[in-house]
Image (tube, rainbow over all chains, first blue to last red; front, side, top):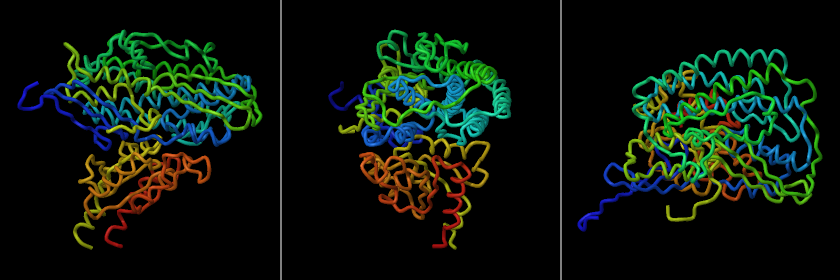
Length: 377
Length: 145
């Protein structure tokens, strides 16, 4: 530290900033071009959902919980429904379980494509962004045909799913997947070979396997560091033991590996959807459950597009939860993000790479805003 | 109609701010910029700075944390300026504020309690066509009132 001037400067980014799609406050400590520290405030989206959930019935809460995150709303309602169902100790019909997987995987494809577009935009490759988002409309069309709405689907309900599928719809889903698959394969080729993508992502945002475990990273962020962890495989919650799929990992530990993991997961999700659609069991889609839940405590977890999503519900025997706690994948990935954004020894982080690293964990701050920041930021 | 209103009508540049949204409306706002809807052909451009924007497109219920920011962004925009509230949460607080006991403690009941709003686009989330309609409605209003 020099005596006449300070070497370390603060650069505030946000809450409204062209590089951010959601309000968050990043306070970067920079030494020249290098980021040496970061302070993150993600509380701008804090709404107080967990407290409000205590005043609403289980059925009303379904619509509140769904709006924790618009992108992974299927995963949110699925986790909540699984928790309430296990509170009742009831299994749902097999047809509903398969339909839940179809909805979940379509929303995963949608989320990963959306993210790929945003990542391309952060790299500065807007043509790629536009192409990807055009193909994303295919999945939105499928979601609309399946549930009735493009984004917020309300597909999962307590005890099953809301709508049944017809043979016509199943063939439409098959057709949509067939259309999507070659496009995703083409994007994979581009990501592997395009020089500008390689230059902007390889060796950027390194998270070693040891760091990934130490910071409790989840989802594609963890799998891109070579660690095989997926709730669908480790703790099957929706007939995943009957559906063949691979847990995708990559060894790059950088932003490029995270892109590849997500692209391969899209291909895997397409196969899972195809399997479910062709082997859909017959039967009812809904198991009616009473309004009041028995007394008890339950937790449930689901592999959301961004990683492990965790819900906890405590019931006092009434028709409203006594306590509802949500832990989202972005929140779990924030310590890893801080590690990635901090220069250490030979690993340097340039200011220009901050948006790419931030995008590489696929942040969703509306999920992560679980507490209100009362500090100085 | 002066030259400024004329320019406003022909190319309303938008600024998007998320005041606590679940991201549902945000991705639909971004969807209108992408090839299927492609609003740039109509002169609508998404800008990063409030000082370049004509129309402020706000999504999400206004949280206490974001309320000061939205006011600051509104004040930074040059006149003439319009505000479009996208989504039911932004209009009334929606599912987050049901008026009674179950309201979220950190949410204001609607954007118009903070800044004046010119167009309301209901829906959860509204379709991209509806958002586009909202923006074109405020653009047509330029110079009329």
